[in-house]
Image 1 (tube, rainbow, N blue to C red):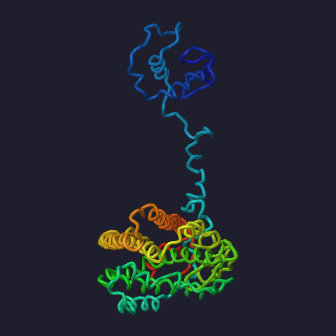
Image 2: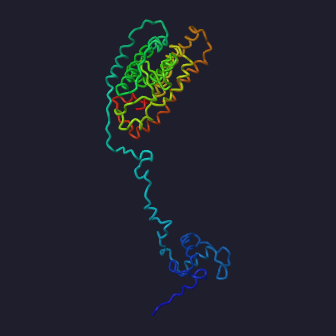
Image 3: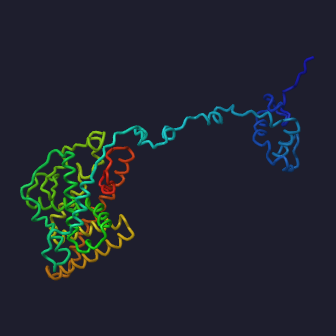
Length: 395
């Protein structure tokens, strides 16, 4: 015998059947309704209009009760057949490359686990020289009765210290760079010994301050020397900068050897090198020229910027010491303006001088993201024996 099942009409709504759904002949509308509502609390609710039947459309609770009554079964639901919403497809969709390698897009080409050739730079001898200078103190003290700014200016007077006949460097090698480090590190150390209050500190604190400020001191010295060279009409191009060690550098045309600090070519890393190509402090040179600070004012600027930077970097005890140093020098600058320049209305000029200091500080802060990116991308492969000495230098 062959059993024939009529599938002409939907068992729920008596409309035309469109096949067997969940074990019962039904239309697609009733099948979709059961698929959505099966297992919901509608089955427990009473009729919504009290007129449900074959002559009227069924309300939702009655329609769901009818589905169960005629034999629709939730166990016959089939999953993962819809190509647009398949859980299998969702599980097999590949991750983005960023998530797959675990690194953001801008460092895809960098493999931190890949072996790299590190170049060790030993500055222990230079540090030892700086320590000896701090321990020895000032080489001579002929002005014992003078104020602290006079003593500092007596050592570092850029007007007499910078040679009239300067040398121009077209190529900047590893040796040239280390010479600059040595010059500014040791010059800053000697300059600090001429400040009596600094000499009273414990030696480890002195070294910590020296490590922090030597490169900041060098930035301001380059500004002052470049301004002086412009006034002397020694510079042939606006892109040239001067250093008090008697060296001219044209930052736009200078050929820089980077093979000792990086595996990349110069054009690939010049963006990350501080003071190379477009020197971000070049606009301040003209301001320096117009203000033409005296040696006392220049040494106040050097000290204020250096001590503020060190205090802001280390905080705590060193911040208190740096604040005290700045107050001592501010009082001495006031005496200089009143007693020697015979003016008490100097706030406007001092404000313009300190704007230069603030601009230098801002320049250092703005460069920090570049340094972070360079470290992330392993741009510079040099490792220093004293890395704390090169914080904020760009390496």
